[in-house]
Amino acid sequence: PEVINGKTHKATVVDLSPWVEYEFRVVASNSVGIGEPSRPSALLKTKAAVPVVAPTNISGGGGSRSELVITWEPVPEELQNGEGFGYIIMFRPLGSTTWTKAVVASVEANKYVYRNESITPLSPFEVKVGVYNNKGEGTLSSISIVYSGEDEPQIAPAGASALSVSAAEVEVSWQPIAWNRHTGRVLGYEVR
Image 1: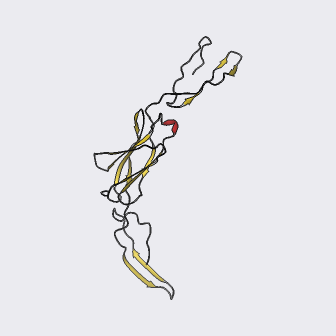
Image 2: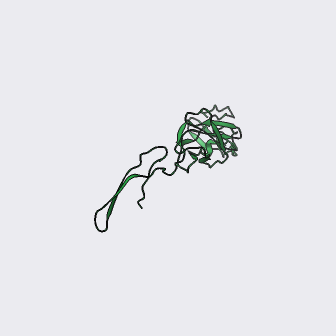
Image 3: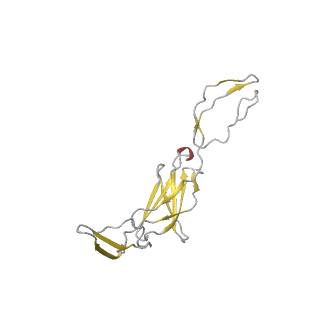
């Protein structure tokens, strides 16, 4: 608080964080200077409140076929604002109007995996992650696009040919597989 009149014996401290322990000291001052601080007060915890900070770095992807993997940066303890803290995950296929909602009741959680056989490989989903505690639901993050897991490539490379280069070497060549939702990202080829 700002400097208080010498005849005042109490002050209201504002803009504290909810559900955080504080201790207080008082220092007397006059025109000569500032004196020694008082002993610290007993620790006092502010009351809990609904969390207001949403998780950041919402992303994901990867995982196995028929999975949607969602990840986020966990909210630090000092911003959880109360007991019973957890995460609310909301997602829907891109273009859909209906959200699916899941709850993760772990403070340390930073990942949620949704499994459903009806999810096609590399499908885009709109994703939001929010927070809650015993006081209620808090803020949701902005929407991020996350893709479901890939499947193994369903198409074999075409045009494989071999050319003898020497007595000990053969050069093998093929046409690369073009990217599409059924092939996913081709990370490499295996020559047999």
